[in-house]
Image (cartoon, rainbow, N blue to C red; front, side, top):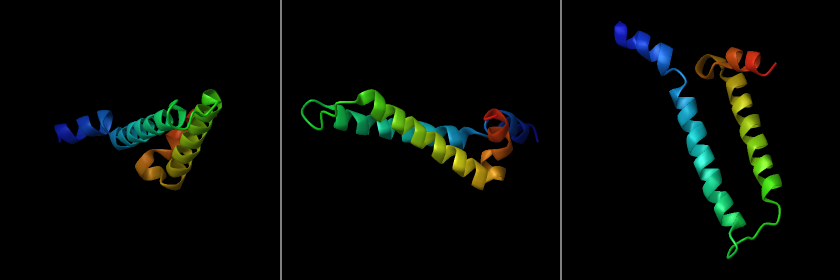
Length: 81
């Protein structure tokens, strides 16, 4: 089927990309609350953002390792070497 071949080539990672986008948007909104002068006024934004990126990477790597058929775990492991 022509359409399923298109999906396999171009859209196979769309759920993972959409999940990454939603999590990143949520973390950005959370950062705004934490770093806002009228709210949390956290003094170390670079450290905080670096921790968020580390957590995102660890979560996505773990999920892709636990469910390699759905999230392409072998591809991710080869990229991380």
